[in-house]
Amino acid sequence: MSTDLTRLSIFEMQAGLRAGAFSCSELLEAHLLRIHALEPRIHAFITLAEESARAEAQKADARLGEARKSDQMDQLPTLLGIPIAVKDLITVKDMRCSCGSNVLGEWIAPFTATAVQRLVDAGAIIIGKTNTDEFAMGSSTETSAFGPTFNPWDTSRVPGGSSGGSAAAVAARMVPAAIGSDTGGSIRQPAAFCGVTGIKPSYGRVSRYGLVAYGSSLDSMGSFTRTAAESALLLGIMAGLDKMDSTSADRPVPNYHKGMSEGVRGLRIGVPREYFIDGIQSEIKTTIKAAIETYRELGAEIVEISLPHTKYALPVYYLIAPAEASANLARYDGVRFGARQSTGSMVEMFFDTRGQGFGPEVKRRIMLGTYALSAGYYDAYYGQAQKVRTLIKQDFEKAFETVDVIACPVTPTTAFKIGEHGDDPLAMYLEDVFTLPANLAGVPGIAYPVGLDSNNLPIGMQLMGKPFQEETLFRAVQAYQSNTKFHLQSANL
Ligand code: GLN
Image 1 (tube, rainbow, N blue to C red):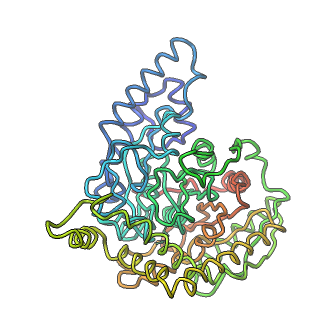
Image 2 (tube, rainbow, N blue to C red):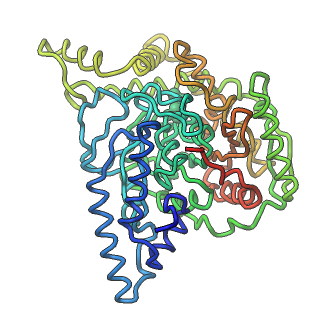
Image 3 (cartoon, rainbow, N blue to C red):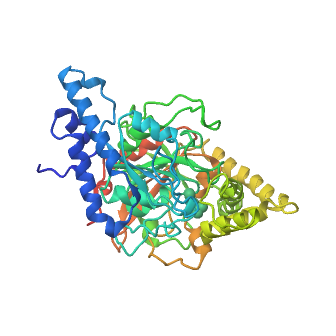
């Protein structure tokens, strides 16, 4: 076969499979071949599910064959035979789920996350579980107990995190799409570092059932793809009410492709002055400004806005997220969950299981969170943070009275070197300044490539939208991607 199947978009894969140009098994093997060739340099995966994926591909081919014979091709599920990777913080039945931690040992998930199940029901084939910072705490995948993932654009650099494995897998064309989670930036930041399109939907748009909890009031599940059109396709399948998650929204899921190509004429794009602060890489500033100019040329109206409480997002997030994490991670005690350590007393068993199982960043967060929630400090820290969170949310509500979307950088720098923030947790936390506000406010955010810096590293732009108006984000990114070529650039591997 002459075409490299890993270069095709999901839409081209769908068409090729239906036209009989290649089979589901051939499509899968092309991606497995690429994974095997590149994995020693990239390390995007914690677990590969080759055997089950091959079995599913055969079944999908049989289904295709029957549909062809009975002339029912239009009845085939949308994603039939499309290989997809899933962050190892999200459960897939009968596959190991490590959360990038030693504490879970060889835990095998007994059920599949609702959103992933919807993809599987639509025919997708799960090819494996991708690397993540331990319990999604980090911005580089370096806190993974399985070692870091390497950025496909420059393997001396991080791919971002925590969903770095998923972002790198898509950037390296190991899969056309991967699922991730975002509590403070973990989809958008790695998407920016790896030059792919990553969406964090509105809080409640996609069920969290099967997403291992980090900060329950902030966690969202979303995807990495190469284009907005593919992102829209996946969200349409993953989104929607789920009775297993009481915070999932009971709102209809729109057809995200409808109106997606209408362009941005008349769209009001807000540019928040607080997001262009000193200290951000100058090439990021100029590239984002150029992308905003492109929007102006395409007919959008550019409006300067203010989100005055932006500077509080970082301290607020680093109280609320660890507080929620300290409660959520109590279950890894060797009794309910967690590989039990020690033969001593019960208390020793708790100490040993948690002491040996968790890495240093997770312990730091648990201590921070427990402290912020402790009697005597609760009001001063957690209570205060919740009040400021409301102010941040109100900033967005006010801004969205005058604009349709907000455009800004994703990150203050492009991908940094492995080990660069080694002993400095604060430097790592600062990576998230531009992504945390969307989680605190519950609004959707999408990151996509708009240029390269002088080191040939991708620069991402972020658009944030009104709650449950992901369709406006897709329309705006689509307008950009159909007029520019940055999303087609790929790492030279
Ligand atoms: N980097 C942030 C943190 O460490 C966000 C991570 C995430 O979104 N899961 O908490």
